[in-house]
Length: 319
Image (cartoon, rainbow, N blue to C red):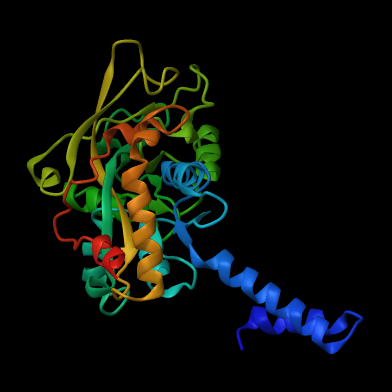
């Protein structure tokens, strides 16, 4: 018997009354448990200051009707951990990850058979790579030998920072603090820079005063980097206290993907995710209006993600 059913049985046993009445209570509660879980999907996202959790919160706000469909947004620890959590954690069906995470997980053999266990629902948007530096650090080359925070191990930022620094042949001393602590250390002058992969404008930088002396470093769109990433810019409209009016900072971007466990068509979990995807398509226009995150306006649900297999939600609806 499932653990929750055992718990409900135990609670019912404490109640006074005839045995038949207690059995009726257990049956009613078990039906409520089944109904509550019938349309529930769990979405693992990112940290509290990142774009992923705000996208997941939007999905919950728009698609969760409180009855037939529940959408539970879950704080996560980055793209690589999210891929593992989609595969290994009960209750996690969907995760938001960087588009280069699956290839990295495959190369590192993080989870055996990951290629066959992870698919995608949609490419969401592009995420800009922010490198915020201390005063006196004028270009990427100045970071050589310096301490640079790259977020927690297993995060998408840590993965991308490793790929970028390796590609550019830049040797830095990495730290793995959570981003809000890293920002505090950067403002104190304890580290030289922090790397953060997030869709602009990232809330992490919203409270920085104009006189902080901190600034974004440009990342050149070299041919080697363009094999994996896209050219992008950061502007004053994104970060008015860090970038002068009319100025832009050259950077690069990586795609964000809504990944999903490759449930077998015909299974209960496949049907639940299929209904979620169908609702996403039907109500997509609602994501394009305030107060939803502006990154939704970059989403093309039909876009393909090279190296990934698309989740066939229509197969789930046909069954």
